Image (cartoon, rainbow, N blue to C red; front, side, top):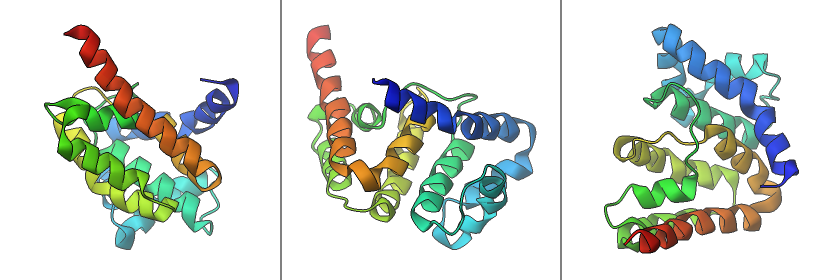
Length: 175
């Protein structure tokens, strides 16, 4: 990973760390953030996002942040993980990246052109990942990828595909 991406990841670190810590201490706070997963009740997390300096009028960034903080609140993890999105999709299915369902979900994600569309596809996909994969996602990285998607969508999509298919290479070498 280059230093530009590392800097972006650390940019989101205080927010993600705060959400993990606060959700463990305050179940009411966690419940409000879980409701932010729905676009109709996304406003439940606006106070938090505003306190962290997010421009709430910037719809694209607001939706990306709301999706990720809601995902953190629904996760069973106690801290940010290391699992990338592409690899998590593959690990959600017993056949990994060889699964037709996994490939279909990845391809639907890769077909997205806007952050709003990615968020719409990711909502149920993140729920699936959280229900099937025990290793926690890297939410800081996911948030960075979502906020960068509008500017570097081809690079982000290629990264997700690389992560997905790289898990297939690791499975092949373990056999």
